[in-house]
Each structure stands twice: as structure tokens, then as C-alpha cells.
Length: 324
Image (cartoon, rainbow, N blue to C red; front, top):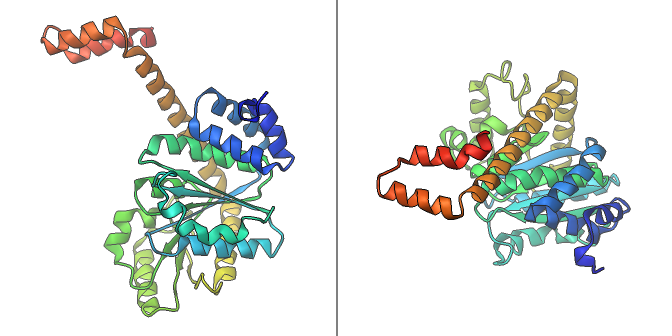
């Protein structure tokens, strides 16, 4: 049997034993979706729950990839194993950020304690919404204690993905916009830690004041997202590693807060409920695509065009097998 066609359970056993190639193949299976991806999910789920998910997001050019690389180095200095999922809106075949920004993380490519994987959105939120939690669960199941999800930008896809982490780090630069821009991006709603990266540039103090003012206007004591947590603001220079230790201390402090207040459990409960909803929605979409074919479908489409049947009645007929 060729290696490419081996069943998920064999690859999963090898990935659990430390085979990086098997792990990469399983992640590809998850990205493709379908029955094999669901099989991987069934294998991963019972063995997951120990890993901790940290999301890093922020505007393009904020230096997230360099900061992620510096964070990896900091974790490895304590011999911690880490996995990184780099969420990219570009195609994996056209280069772009994957071959540009992400090359900054390649210093760790030969480190057996580090696993880095890019996942392309290709402009579609739905598939990635399902693939990302499955990929995280797989990395958790094979023993990665720390899982970093880094996004390229702050669009809907990136904010939603990063905001589903156990701890979300929002990266900004000196002189980065005002509170209106921040709220438009949705960053205030998801940030657990703010990082002012490239802090060797001018404007750090003003950016800190802007962020503090936004936090002052937030209802941190009653915010269900934060449970009374006020996001700290950490200054870093990721190219030199300055401030990275303080950043990780802030992540650890948030983890302790989330665990002690029950916030972590509430977030994970919310996350699994949302994932279940997405799975059901996607399965219904698949079923709908199956129903919307064939002779009767063509007949109903013609009748709608001829105004002899209204679209809602036609849809009711096609959905009759589902509603039964």
C-alpha cells in the first residue's frame, strides 16, 4: 500500500510516536475535509484537552511572524514543545506571505520540538472554521503542550479564529490608529494581551495611552469575555527579543486568571458549541448540494423561471427528504 493512501489510524499512531511526516499528512487530510478528516477527528478527540491555545493577530506588517518566532525561541529555552498554525489568506501555491513573512520562522524548521504549518483560507471562512479546531485538536493529541495560531491580518476570518483561542494576543505598532479603528477590527472584543511591537520606534507612549483609554471605556468587571481581566500592554522588539519574556509572562498570568475564575472552561464550552454548530451547518450544506441535482431539480428550476411555482414551494419540495 502506498504511503499516500494509508488509513488515518496508521498515520495517527505514527504521529503520536513523533513522526512529523505523518503529522503533516494528517493535517492535509483535515484541510481537505470529508470522511477521512472526520476519522482523524474521532481519533484525536479522546486524547486532546491538555494543550493550551494562544492566538496572535494584528494588522499586516505588525511583525507577528517575527514575534511568533521570538516566542518560539523563548519557549524552547525552557525545553517546551510548541506547534504553530499560521493562518494565511493567500493561496499556498502562489507564495505571498507563506514564502515571505513566514520564512522568519524557519530558524526553527530543523528543531524537533517545533512544528510549523501554514493553512490557507483561500478566501473561505467556513472550511477554515472547521479545519482549525480539528488541526488544533490533532496537535494537542500528539502531545504539543503549547499551540500558537498566528494570523496574517485582522479581517473577519483572522479575528474569529484568533478570538477562539484560550488566550488572544493582539499585536499593534507605534502610531497604529485610534480607538475607532480598533473597535472596527473587533480587536477590543478579543484581546487578552496587547503587544506594542517594534517598540524601538517613536510613538510607543501615545499608542499605549490610546490603548489604555480604550480599556478605560471597557466594562472589564462585567465583560463575559474577560471576567474582570484588564489586558496588559507589553512593549516588544521582536527582532531582538526584547520584551518577549514579559509577553509570555502576561500570557501565563492570563492563563492562571482564566483557570481560577472558570473563564477557561466557559470559553472552551462556548468554543465546542460553536464548532458543533459549524459541523451541523456544513453537513447540511453537503446534504443540500446532494439534493440540488437531478431531473426533479431541473424541473423545479424551470417552473420557478416560468413563474408556475414560487421559489419557497420549490425549496420545500426539495427539502422534504430532510424534513421527513
